Structures are given as C-alpha cells and as structure tokens.
Image 1 (cartoon, helix red, strand yellow):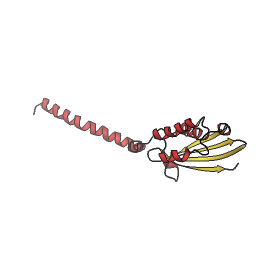
Image 2 (cartoon, one colour; image 1 turned 180 degrees about the vertical axis):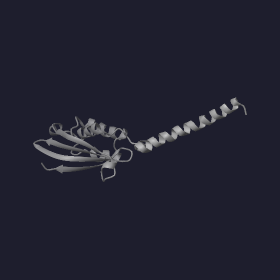
Image 3 (tube, rainbow, N blue to C red; image 1 turned 90 degrees about the vertical axis):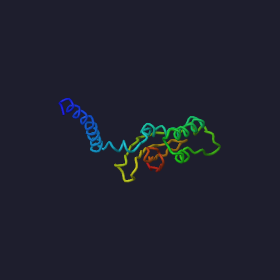
Image 4 (tube, one colour; image 1 turned 45 degrees about the vertical axis):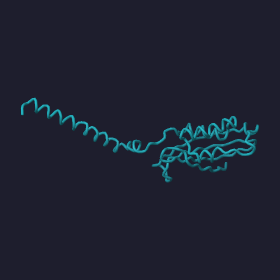
Length: 164
C-alpha cells in the first residue's frame, strides 16, 4: 500500500468518525444541560404571562359580544386552550348582550406567576394570576390558576375567591 492510498484510507475513516463524535458530544451536552426536555417534548411556546393577562381581560372585560366570541375561537384555533377549556371560560349568560354595567367592569391584574413542572407538586406547568374585578359597586378579589398539558396548552383552571 503506497502513501497515497494510506492517506485516502485515513481520510475516509476520519470522515466517518468525526460526525459520529460530534453527534455524541452534542447529545452529551443536551443531556448534561437538561435541554433535552425541550427536544423531546414539543411544548407550545404561545402561552406566557402576557397571554394569560390577555385571556383574563378578554373574559372579564370584553368590548363587545362579537369580540368575546372571536377571542374564544382565537384561543382554541391557535392552540392556546383546549376546546373544553374555552367552553368553560368563555360562557355567555343572560340574554347574550353586554349591559352598561358589564362594559364598565374593571379588572386589575396584580401579578402573574409561572411555575414549571419541576417546581410544584401538581406535575404540570401552571400560571397563577392574582386579580380583582370591580362590577357595579362590588369588588371581588380572586386568584385563577391555569394548568398546561404536556403540549403547553391550557386545559384546566381553578378560581379561588380571596377575602380581603
């Protein structure tokens, strides 16, 4: 075997081995850094604190019934909420029209906190919002907790009234 053939064989081996080594190094990095979870679980990144605030505003202080219905459809169509959750949160009561008192509701969102699956005992990502709603002369303080499924879609909520 001459030197030229030897170099070709070495080059051929290097071309096969180097990509494998790079792949193993990259795989090791993702395992050590914990970033593999993002690769394995295709989570919806559409839900964040701003989206939670918008959902609350759309539910409690809509500008019209058409807007209310359109936002409900938007949250489902954009994979932000499950259909069941949309139907649970975007309910219409009475005659289906907003009264002057409805239009004058004031929602105050004090804070929105995110808790990931590793930071709570519920074993799902969650958002908790502390709010108050002024309707006529009454003020109701409450917290609402949104749970996200493995795909990052809101599938459940719990509302707790807070006594002030």
